[in-house]
Amino acid sequence: MPDKVDKPKRKINKQKTKVPMPEQAPADRIQNFDEVPLGYSTEEAISEASRCAQCKDRPCTDGCPVEIDICAFMRLVGEGDLIGAFKKIKEKNFLPSICGRVCPQEDQCELRCTLNKPDKGRESNAIGRVERFIGDHARQHDIKITPDTIESSGKKIAIIGSGPAGLTTASDLIQLGHEVTIFEALHRPGGVLFYGIPEFRLPKEILMEEIAGLSDMGVKFVMNYPVGKAEPLSELRERFDATFIGTGAGLPWFLQIPGENLNGVYSANEFLTRVNLMGGYRFPEAADTPVKRMKRIAVVGAGNTAMDSARTAQRLKPEKVHMIYRRGRDEMPARHEEIHHAEQEGIEFNLLQAPIEIKDNGKGAVRSIICQAMELGEPDASGRRRPVPIEGQTREFEVDTVVVAIGQGPNPLLLSDCPELECDPKRGTVVADPVTMQTSWPDVFAGGDVVTGGATVILAMGAGRQAARAMHRFVTTGNGAPAS
Ligand SMILES: Cc1cc2nc3c(=O)[nH]c(=O)nc-3n(C[C@H](O)[C@H](O)[C@H](O)COP(=O)(O)OP(=O)(O)OC[C@H]3O[C@@H](n4cnc5c(N)ncnc54)[C@H](O)[C@@H]3O)c2cc1C
Figure 1 (cartoon, rainbow, N blue to C red):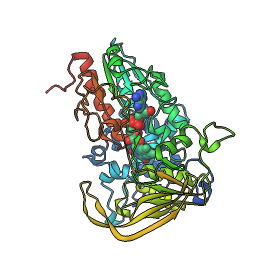
Figure 2 (cartoon, rainbow, N blue to C red; figure 1 turned 45 degrees about the vertical axis):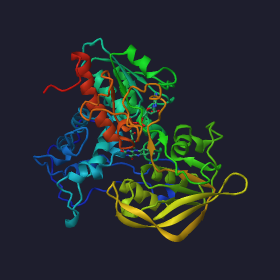
Figure 3 (cartoon, protein in one colour; figure 1 turned 90 degrees about the horizontal axis):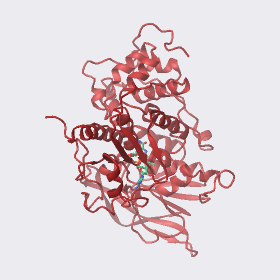
Figure 4 (cartoon, rainbow, N blue to C red; figure 1 turned 180 degrees about the vertical axis):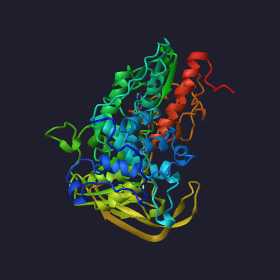
């Protein structure tokens, strides 16, 4: 593949709407775990990039937590300089194929895009789709950007957790000459990107290839090493010049209703881990860990985790998948694209229904879930309209499986042996400075979901970048704070 496609000058594409991206038809895709959107061809990517207005003030970049120069890479793609575009993205983001797939662009860069004028029938530039194309093109053509060789600083950094926060911190710090070791509790790196987000949204092969780039740069991975159990944090930090905590929010919340301990009730984390990490849908032929054969499933919640659970369940060939959510459609926190795909795939949305009990089938397993009908009241602290019960109205859903996907918080394993490290007592999150990500232990930094609670991939990456800057200052000057 040549570096430049034969297209010498950038043309302007005045099309009002995004160049559509082909995808598997709903009836086909629920029969498999293959990726749903199929990605742009080179011509489609160039055509979409040529819609970019090349604004001077670049509002899209302001909406990107890792500050990618979006107009610059769009211009390069429009000119056919695909390698130049890849280099431009890589200056700020080492996971373009991943972010192009899973970032909520509609709430970030694309929301701020000047083209985004729904009242005039004009759609934003499809920034995520073009970023994904550039990342995929580079991988498919084995294009690598080798960072300049940097003299070793002699400083040792520990990173706990290999999700997007830990990986970004590692990438930035190794490029500054530090020796970086990542400690990961599971046997695969990637955090939620591996064990949570399903193959049909983010193929694992892509994740492994993007992470391999870090090993190539010299980052060491220590797998199957749950810090807090394998070694206390207080001891581990003594072996390093600085430590980053990026352990995410992997502890599921439950509904706290009767019947939640029946067989057939899963947390979304367990359900998705069985299928994604352990390959449960290929049991017993190609995997050791089973996932229950289910006929009728209720998934409780309406965030990305709930959509992923429902869409995963639908691929296990059940009779029916219900989503149950206590608020209305406008309040659903999942990405619009995921909601749209879930509906296309035949998931039934049951809105304004709050589970109050899970019934026993007489053998200790789930028979049904009872829900209280709700209506919307005034907005609550989250800004969304509060669900209020409608007295006397309930509904019973006959199901044999319930997947609870109502949120999660940090796992206390790591933090339980270090009560001196300041945490938020209510949320269980680590308290860190919002700019430097430094914790109450000056040599320990933290970022991503373990600080914010469940958020997004790109926010975790942004926090990792902030922490890396401060950690570099800390190990080189003894002070994490930026120069005033
Ligand atoms: C099912 C699901 C779907 C999602 N979909 C999207 C999406 O489409 N778009 C989006 O932007 N966001 C999405 N999110 C949210 C996003 O994935 C997270 O915000 C992001 O992964 C947080 O990154 P992190 O690095 O902080 O933590 P994580 O990704 O959770 O990684 C933390 C890592 O730390 C490891 N760890 C934990 N404790 C220890 C310990 N004691 N010792 C060693 N290692 C430890 C864990 O095993 C894990 O690998 C989704 C989340 C879920 C659960």
